[in-house]
Structure formats: C-alpha cells, structure tokens
Amino acid sequence: MLHRLVLVLFAFLLAVPVSAQSDDIEQMLRQRDTEIKAILGTGTPTAAQRDELREVVNGVIDFEAMAQQALGSFWTELSAAQRTDFAETFGGVIRAQSLADLDLYRARVSYGDVEVNGATATAHTTARSGDVDAAVVYALARKDGAWYVTDIEIDEVSTVEGYATSFQRVMKRKGVEEGYEMLMASLRKRLARAG
Figure 1 (cartoon, one colour):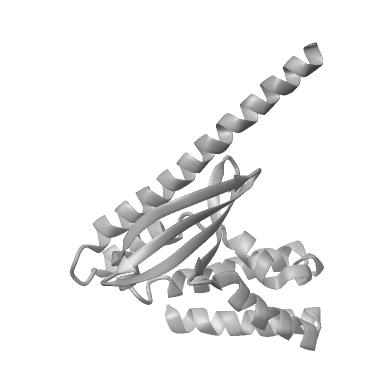
Figure 2 (cartoon, rainbow, N blue to C red):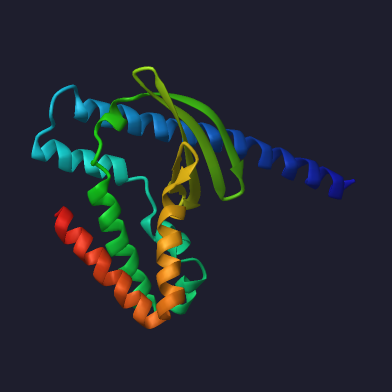
C-alpha cells in the first residue's frame, strides 16, 4: 500500500512541474520578445541599443550546446581547452550575425505548444511580418536551473544543422586536429569581419 502511495505521489509531483515548466518557457520567450521590441522601437537603433539588443537576443542561448551539436561525435575527440575555445568562437560568430535582419525581431509572435520531456523541451511559435508567417521552433535544455535555447528552427531550417553539415564535413575530410584548426581559422575570420 505504501509503495502504491509513493508511486501515485511521485507521478503527481512529476505532472505538476511539466506544466509549470511549459509556462516558464513560454514566459521566458514572451519576456525576451517584449524586451527586444522595447529596445528596438521603430527607428534605426543606436550602437548602444544594438549592443543591448544583442545581449537580450543571445542571453538565452547555450552556445556550448549548439557547438557540441554542430560538431556531433567530433566534439568528444577535442580537448577540454579546444571545446571551450570552439564554443566561445562559434558563439561569437552567432552573436555577431544575430542582428543581421532586425525586421525579424519586429514580427508579431504568437505562441503555440511547449513540449517538455525531462530536461529538454520544444517551443513552437509563429512570427508574422506583414502578411507572411514563419514557423519558429526553439529547442531548449535545462541547465543550472534555467532553460536555454540549444537550436532555433525557422520554417524547418535548423541553425545547428546548417553548421553541422559543413563543420562535420571538414572534420571528416581533414581529420580532427587539422579540421579543428581549419574551422577555428574560418570562424575567427568571420568574427573579425563582423566585429
């Protein structure tokens, strides 16, 4: 009897957080959108506003998780220092590119289902710009007690998969060490051009 009671209580405790976590994720995305629109306004943002906007846009992204997914199985073949360097440089490139099209952030966003599966989640949104809708799906993971975005898919095009295809091709063709050096040189050039 006690065993059954424990199982029922455990199932109840699991059910409540999933709903609460779905609400937390939607609230986080809504707050991010509100902050972005408040900074962006309707005119051309100043340099200071662009810096602030870049922080809000990228503040919920786990660049290490994105870098790990982009390298796939090659990630484990890198040293800890290489992983850190790669994630920081890759994150810098994404941060630099994040404000390439400010109109994306002016779109009206509607929120759909949020599916939580343990420490991962998927949040479905639709961004409407004029009379054009774009499906935007966020992959998220829980880390250090908070939810972070690990991939963004716009109209079924994944940010991570786009990088993964080219990064992993280089690593396969050149081998881990030479491939890593080539990727880092390319990412550093992109970062310098953006900066």
